Length: 135
Image (cartoon, rainbow, N blue to C red; front, side):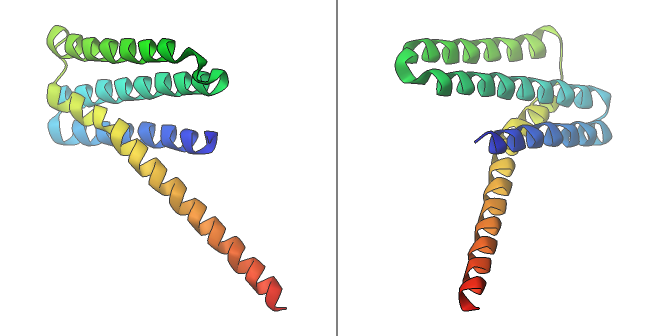
């Protein structure tokens, strides 16, 4: 399970970097800076979720209310952070959303790549076992 999580983390960071570079190239410094901040928030959000899920897996569902409270607090903190970054610090909203979208895109692309590679590996091993049965 950690292989797919590591792969997703890589894709979130990579796509955040690509989004930031494209935002700088197309939208200029303000949009690029917004994308950079948004990608950072996306990666921080994923890192916290990753940490929390590992703890939940280790401890099981016995502390379900504590986990729900932590997830709720994380969501509130994320909403407040986004609001402060955009309204208080003047981060460009369009750039911020471009960078933040790396979270969703990274999860989707990472999962698809992992699944495709797993499917290819299983078909290769099935093919090699079929070939060894023929001989």
